[in-house]
Structure formats: C-alpha cells, structure tokens
Image (cartoon, rainbow, N blue to C red; front, top):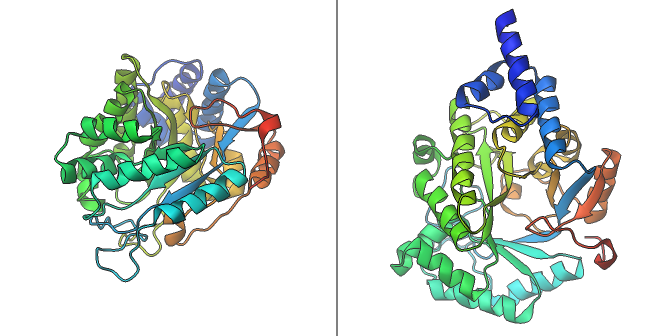
Length: 371
C-alpha cells in the first residue's frame, strides 16, 4: 500500500469514526485496503458513539418455521421441501401454540415466524394463525419476510401494501429481514431466482415502515456475490432507511450480516474465514450510519468470534434462538442458552441486557427462567 493510500485510509477511518457519512468510493477503499484492526477500531468508535453505555443486548425468542414446503428452490437453502415431498410439513395451530407456551416459560418475549412459499395456503390461513396466537398468548410476533409478503400478494391478488395491512390487523407486530441475501438482482437471479427482486424487497420494507411496523435488514454473504455487490447491498439498505426516516412510521431497527453456510446446499463455495466476517461486520457499521444496531452472528460464527465481533461494531448478540432449523440444515449447529449469552457478554467486558424487538429493555426483575 502506498503512503498516499495509507494516508487516505487513515483519514477516512478517522472521519467515519467521528460520524461522517462514507461515500461508495471511500467504502470501496476501506474494503480493499484498510488494515483489519484499524477498520474494527473505527467501527467500535461508531458503536460507542451510538451506544456509549457498556451494554450488549439480545432477545429471547424462538424461530418457528410454520412450514418447510416451498416452491422457490433457492440454491442456498438446505431446509425447504418441494410440494408433495414426504418430509414436507405445515404446523397445526396447536403445535405452534405448544412452541409459544414453551418460549414464554423460558422468558421469551417474541417469536420469529418464517416459512416456505407454500403454493396451497391462502392468505386467510396466515391471518387465522396470527389471530389465534394473539387471542391466546402475550407474545410479539416478528414474522413474514418480504419474499413471503410478495408470495402472499401473488396468491391473493392483492398488493403487497394491502397484504401488510391485513396481516397487521390480524396481529403482526414487525417484519424480519430474511430473504435479502444480496440485494443485487444479478446475484438474486443466480441464487434465488424465484424470490422477489431487490427493489421489491426494499419496497415492501418501506411499505411496512409507512404502516408503522418496524423491521430488520439482513445480508447473507460469501456465496456467489462479489465484494462490490456486498457494498451495493449496504448502500441500498442505507438509502432505504433514509427514505423511511424522512416519513412518519418505522424503519430498520438493526442490521444482521451473516455468512453463507454451504453444506447440503446447491452452491459450492469456500466458507468465509473469521477475519473476512469481522471485516464485513466493521464495514457495515461504518456504512450504515442511519441504522442504530448491528447484530453479531454467533449462530454461524460461533460464540468466541461473536465475542470478538463486539469490538468490530456489534452491539447486539442477536437471539437465544430457542429453536433454529434453517442454518442447522446447512450443517452448522451452535446453541446458546440465555445464561450462556450472559456469561459470554460479561466475559467480553459488557453488561448483558434482554431486549424487545424495538430495543427497549426488559426490566431485569421481570426475567424468568434462563433458556
């Protein structure tokens, strides 16, 4: 690296740490040339500016996959089953209720519900499911990623905004950022050709924000995208958040980047290293100046790297994931209880605090059993 480039990198990192917004060219330079630890330090400075308290948050929830039947056939997914497959399932409302009862008993405050694009379930089934949950359980329902919303619109003949309105009226509380993969259509056509395009993913999220629903944004990286396309994804999320914050309503509460897990999938890829993950995490923190929270991914990287990631821009430990099936199907199986997360966060030098989806804290004296 030449001295001029070194000076430019140092200047950009210093200015980003102080809160100046990065341009695409500057982000590209940092991506290619910034030393890992310098990049991490700048990201940690941004984290401390946004969250000066020495607190790391997490949510106690359960991932409930209501069905694994899906017509998308995404090449990265090892979990789905085609319609008619002997291993396909749709959970009954009773089975869903049992899972929620267990979650609440373990101190859970929300459920994350996602499923495949089932060709035969009408929109009314999802509305009935939400009404059943809300009538019987005091739980936050974080459900239905943008591709699912687009699928519901297609099978119902409604607009995506109408679908969101109906789901919200039935009890939907917020929307997860699943199905983003890489928000570049060239990549999506290769890895998930039957899912909604990038513009529709972003548009659905902005419709949800306008209707008062908060959402998260994710990025699955390390499959068939380029480094430049990762940057396109980050800048697309930043621009989307800008648009939502200019209006009444919600916005993205957090960004969650995680690495692709290739086992049992139809994509041949080299698993990313821990430094590659930390580099992307830190760059995400520097680019996404308008998204308050950045989650680390112990589910794909393991607990030790997740601890280190708290010094590369991360301020949230994600979820206890009382149940998780999709990443497990790809051959990765890290499990952490609430007590183990508390221990890991304290060992990293922070105070662990349980939160809700909107990042309000759960009072410590109301916490029950540790999952």
